[in-house]
Length: 306
Image 1: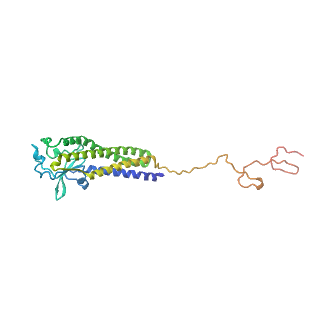
Image 2 (image 1 turned 90 degrees about the horizontal axis):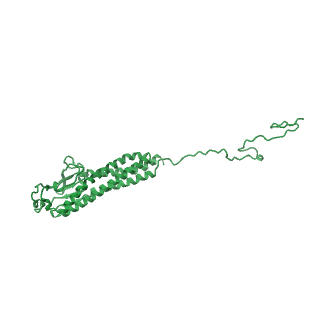
Image 3 (image 1 turned 90 degrees about the vertical axis):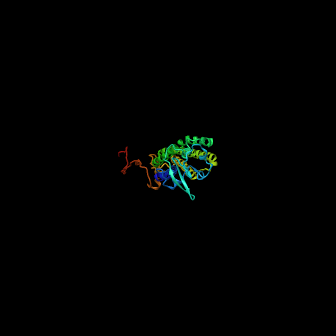
């Protein structure tokens, strides 16, 4: 197949690896602000795992803040969006949402509505249901592992892309790249499954516990789509890297073989009836007896004398 075929065989998994890396990086920039300001890109503003719509919360006289003794008078924003490293809050004006603040990013980040909404150190546990507190406790424990899983998957995918260049020259490079791809896919699947499960449960718990207070919660479909598309790219790249180990050796399949004549090759001996034509074997001169009046040129070992 040659080097050109080997390169063509590597292009597909390399492209899939890049696509997976891009998706993972997009997931990471969701709700990632800059010094408290809103994300600079539309993707950063629109991508989130979890959203709480509290726009109707402050207008209800029977809100949690009115029921809880010693609760903070902190005014709630219209919405809160949760990303991987931080959350953002904002206001809605004439149906248009605008992010006004984003928290600082943390590796072990998890969204705590009790603290963010100013209900800390109050008797809020007597008002909110136990299911909400249990859900928050589970979310806090799992959030750290989930964040690190995304980090490891991204680092391994980047390493997979770099090492993938060595796969152009040998199958050993493909083997090492396949190992990295398998590891990155495992962490990507684990991170995506954890995020989907945790935020799915959290959304359900929030909806059940806070629906009487007119707080609507939902998951971010765009974030889920980007995340799982990245996982699909990661798995597909691993499959193609595996194929590059078994196939596409990069060596030319056509080799010229020189046929050497053996010393015992049969050759036709010319027939005396048709003369000395064609290929002939070299033979010694025939013995001719010498007689009177003849001067033979052949070898005569016993020539008689007259």
